[in-house]
Image (cartoon, rainbow, N blue to C red; front, side, top):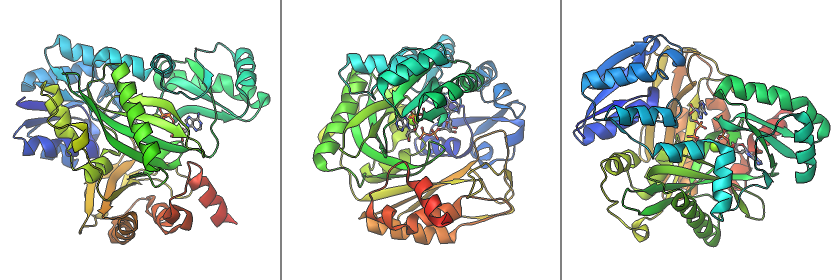
Length: 448
Ligand code: ADP
Ligand code: ADP
Ligand code: MG
């Protein structure tokens, strides 16, 4: 592999460029007209403009991206996360053009990208899934009937959902009746697919996920878990590894189950199996993300592996060079996602960053998208970057994170830095006993 085109933007494009550079691989950035002056465009060896700002016309424009790849002589395309990363049609088009798509087989992506189908595959494989109904639900009437069978509260979900979009918690029949059609409409608008299903809503749960990797020679391993229960709008903002909630027996069980899930679908590449866990430490399969995850750096920090390097090696059909026993979880790492958003309402807050300074020091890694003068536009995800902090213990990592946050200077726009600071200073967070309800509970407590 000599030339890799990166079909993405922002911090993840820079992250991929970094590993390619280290491996002597030439990188091609593609970008929209809105991103012409972003750092990732400059840092790549070549850059091609692929269209106007809206993603449908640029970052999701498969033919423009393939055209750029052919013109630049790219051997492979790295899709990053979001955008085309879980799009089976795009992976197929790459194959037709003789370009390697860095990711699993298109069939696996399609099976796992559809949550109803993924649940069915996991049930077959003996992996515990959230109790629920495993099919596409036609209307509110059927939804109420199914919800009554599952027992309230329930969660309406879009089969094609992602990024926390297309889900709705319902406490009773009236709420299902009210929410069903609008949720279905939202799914159609966001994902072009309005298949809806229903799961039992697990109360006060933990989101715990397992990083896995499979080569094209049949070996599948895990790289331990990430605790991702600090969320707002059903989307993660802080992730850590190891999970402070797990004991060793549960850790072993959940990691083995993730490997079993990956084996069941013949997974190749790096991927993540997401689980929801209740207070009794029972865990249930939520979904599988068939790509690099936003929070992959915490796994890199505790295991010492470069997951992008691993993706490239697997794409080149190399066998994994280590065994499961050689993967260790050492020390502790925490990632904080820095967003251009209102710290109180969590609504995106785009604008130009007049001054930007990032923290530095021992145990600090910053993966970011911007510099002074960069604009966060309303066209894309409002993430500015990620602060990843590691230490020999969780307490040391938290202390370093608190210190690092105070070093950030981001002027000209609103950010969630104050909210991240509140979490780090919180006693429940320090004790490591938080659930996905933590951010809401913290908000309610401070409003009193
Ligand atoms: P991760 O699952 O890696 O922890 P997120 O859920 O925050 O991270 O999603 C990663 C990125 O992909 C975000 O920019 C999010 O908005 C976007 N995303 C994820 N799934 C979808 C989807 N199905 N459609 C559109 N955007 C998505
Ligand atoms: P996405 O594809 O948008 O990432 P997920 O199914 O992974 O959707 O769920 C995102 C988040 O929503 C989870 O991390 C969790 O906080 C919440 N969630 C999803 N399903 C359930 C459930 N059945 N019970 C409780 N919370 C859930
Ligand atoms: Mg998810």
